[in-house]
Image (cartoon, rainbow, N blue to C red; front, side):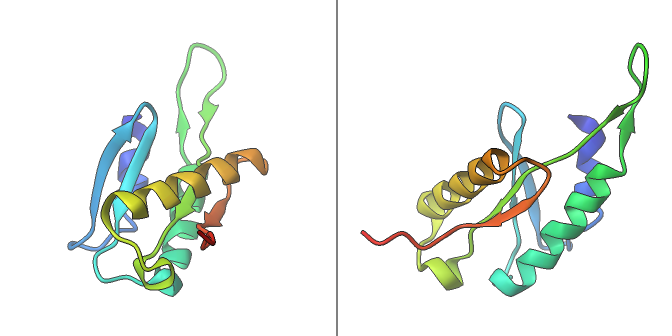
Length: 109
């Protein structure tokens, strides 16, 4: 888990925050970033994590990540609701083959 913190942190600005969300999940809050700004940052994080290898008992372990983006400017939600949308987008990325970025979709209520 520690091996991916630095590659993620390298793409963040001083005003952004990263924290462990649970298990092997992290949440990144991009301060004052809209969906258009978040997307390229997420792709750069994806590329940086893919470049990490962790020494194991045999062959080095290559890492990947799945990223879900939820932006308040497109979804009109904040706080826990925004995180729930991002979480749903992460699981969609995992279902679609992992190692990719998915944007949270606006769901009609």
